[in-house]
Amino acid sequence: MLENLAVVLFRPKFPENVGSAARACLNMGVTNLILVDPYNFDMDKARPLATAHAKHVLENATIVETLPEALEGFTSVYGTTARTGGWRKGIMTPSTLSDVVNDRLRSGGKVAIVFGPEDKGLTNEETSLCSGLMTIPTSREGTSLNLAQAVVVVLYECFKKSLDKPFEADGPPQERPTTVQEQEALFSNLQESLLAIDFLKDDNPDYWMLPVRRFFSKINLRRNEFNLLMGVCRQIQWFVRTYGPDKKK
Amino acid sequence: MLENLAVVLFRPKFPENVGSAARACLNMGVTNLILVDPYNFDMDKARPLATAHAKHVLENATIVETLPEALEGFTSVYGTTARTGGWRKGIMTPSTLSDVVNDRLRSGGKVAIVFGPEDKGLTNEETSLCSGLMTIPTSREGTSLNLAQAVVVVLYECFKKSLDKPFEADGPPQERPTTVQEQEALFSNLQESLLAIDFLKDDNPDYWMLPVRRFFSKINLRRNEFNLLMGVCRQIQWFVRTYGPDKKK
Image (cartoon, rainbow over all chains, first blue to last red):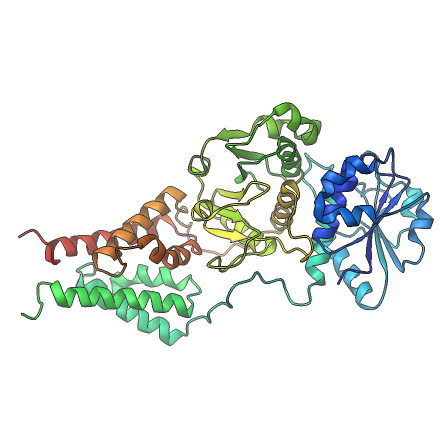
């Protein structure tokens, strides 16, 4: 899905961050990693952070000297920045970026997302090569994200959007919601059961049922849950018939 | 915005991940970090990863021995898992979780999100204490996220949603949400009641309680509703004592 999306790390300072970024790439279905002039790059420091699973992403990473070399062949390039002032208008969020990225990919494009060095980020020289800029929302107290953490957040949004169908965890499909008729059947059954055990009073059971009804009305009750509750009611009524004060002797 | 959201790291193995997680917390506006029985915890290894900015989040982290201790006082608890099969139904995504979390926070709740150990994740024992479970969508090739990366993705979604303005319906203030302790008291009372009327079987009541637990965990149960349900349980138990087959003659 994201075969034509690449992550470009521009002058990363710490090999460990490159390794972590490689792992994050694989987690989110991206295997094309490009390093531009990495500082003191050391595969042995990067590899443990990539873990065995993403070792191939790291080892197959392309290493080039300049950003223009890295961007050859791409149709769209987006830069990430923490600086949102000044002329940097129209800056996207990860969410809006991921819409654009997936649009481009689906129309046959090749997209690169560029992340700057840990300490300084991208300068105007690099961002001028980008078709658009993106910044990750943060609290005021902690505006600086770790490089690999920024990578995982941006790719997570892209991956999420790339799934044609919304992501669904494994497991059986959800049961259908109950109809109004079923809910009424449950209420009258509940009322009968609560009367049988003297929880509700005979004189005005509808009134006493109000909080019970209110409680259930806020739930999107599903069919299996309805069955469960009807079963409890049946059991209460059976118990009362069998053992209660008016039991058939 | 997220003052009442806490991140709970259950038995983290690597202090470095704890440091990275602390930084991720601050980035996304969360300052309440709780460590449960951390393995070989070493503040000196964790601190550099937290960076100077998030040092206070790390140093103010609460360290406790058990998960129940960590969860004291919270009204909703969500667990993270990579295992989505079996009975683990209705698993949320970070996006759907963040809707629920923000709902709960806005209604005055205190919410904890629990992350398991790096290698094994949470076991059924821990997830049984959670009101709901969440999994992060990943590619098939790289299903295992780094712990701090999982933290940043989940908190990023929560932070993003917290920036939206809340919808406020008119009406009287709602009752406070129930605490995890109250919910557990209700479950055990319900279990006793359902056993008393033979709805649950004596051989493995915990198993039969699973759907009942699941049903209640999706509800943001409030104090008045808790009182109502505890009243029903008391009444069932009274009825069984008074009329049941083992009644005192």
